[in-house]
Length: 159
Image (tube, rainbow, N blue to C red):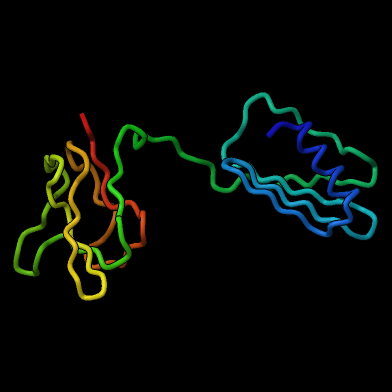
């Protein structure tokens, strides 16, 4: 979203008479509050956008209030890894039973169809099979921990 679109949004909200408008997109969160003759705008960007000029207030009655970016992203090499995610909600287990070894460890080579963990849901133990081949780089969940749908479980290096 560029500065012209933000300015047009501020004008539109000021004319509409709405007391508050929130807009969330992939990399920008905007909150515009109106009342007592002035408009307050809060813009939060998760990732800094290069070449974005600072905006001057659109009208003397409007005040732009920048907010610090939420936790700057630290770029690491995790982008080259594939994430194995939980297909269901339940309890994550790294081994088939307490007296057995873990399905996989960091450094284990896996292939498509290999069981990487078990997730218990409603007293049923569901074996989670890998959909990728590669080497386990990191285990992201502790054993016997609750997991949510689509929660990352493992990082796999496909090379």
